[in-house]
Length: 58
Picture (cartoon, rainbow, N blue to C red):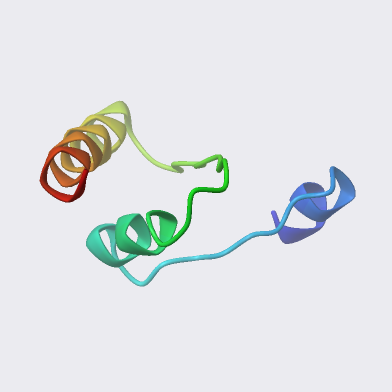
């Protein structure tokens, strides 16, 4: 995955868990893309946590 992202000019960062990854994303205002590998259920959980985190920190 790192090679594919690097070929398009991006940088990959893997978080140890969802909460830490979301906190790292919020550290600056630069635009970001998130790739969630897993089930649709997992994607839903992550989106719900991201929305909750955004409402608390923003």
